[in-house]
Image 1 (cartoon, rainbow, N blue to C red):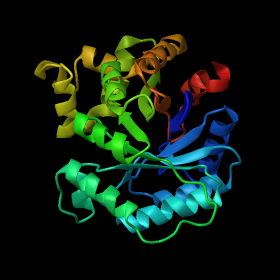
Image 2: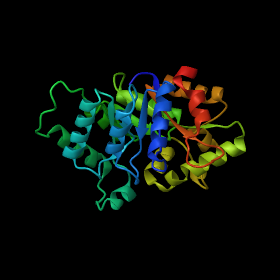
Image 3: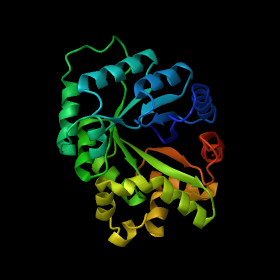
Image 4: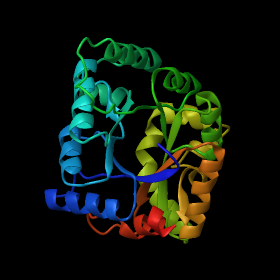
Length: 291
């Protein structure tokens, strides 16, 4: 993916018609792709096909599909089929998720690096020919630690990162090398009130402060135990979440691009939640066509 911009869209709470409005509006605004998280309400790949079938240019990606939920052959078949039927508009993002996610699937958690390596090698070994002349879906790994990033460099088209500072983006680019894609998933809150913006950010990121993998990465990147306690210090929150007016958020996007990101995936935070609808002001302000 090039220096474009996409959206991470949470849609499980939306009705079918609202999902289509969301996708089509994102397409109209000039975003390159809509990434879908692997949650609990709908099947990720069926939903991707539905959106692809009702848009014309927009790419749709998994952001991310957890590998504990599908065996390697099934995952490959999902990706090949969507890439074929929708002429290369599908993107496969993979991740190990976390121990809680594995347990929900009735699976036993394994060391992440070994699990992902074995999974990718099993996908590559599937003895089933791809459809003739079908475009190939690019594969991106959710990768934060140096070892997983090195695996993304050798076994995938690049990496997806989430809730990481620009220092991590710089490190990731150095590990991936110049030719691999680096997609930075960036939470964005269009709010120039520091108190409200940080309150929104803490509420939206709270679950990640209970996941050891994120705590380990933030600690490794130099944040202190005090930074990680009580929902995160102002310093940590300000580093992980881009907030302020549109110019301030675009400046943070530019910092990630300068640090080596090839693509920015916007996660819109709503500073004043009002029901399930997407928060359009931030998506409209950051749209490629508005830049």
